[in-house]
Image (cartoon, rainbow, N blue to C red; front, side, top):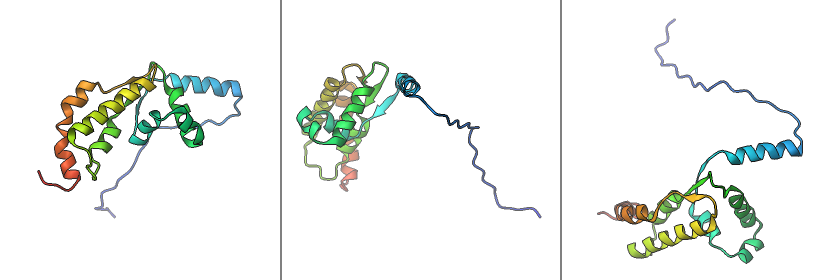
Length: 149
């Protein structure tokens, strides 16, 4: 019998999983190797806001302290951080409480704070990109808030 249904098969690359007991020294080697691979990290608005908080506030919240500690571990010359997700969150805020100029100033302030936080890693978006393209987000923001243009 011939089936007229289209078969769909999902394939994945061959995979090998290895399990072994690991010493603390070998674990550290793997961690160092993993951290040395150049990576682009996308930050959301919550993480960006954490980087702007004082050390006193961070120390009082274990979750924030762990996150900031992890960001400090990732602060390496081969890594890059992107504000793009935070930007999307900011410009699509349905409350729309800020004027365009206020929003742009806040975005540029956030990125300046990120550049101050990361001593070795770079923030991908230059101010010129944010300023030039900011006006093009006005229409997106209006649509996200349910307004017609």
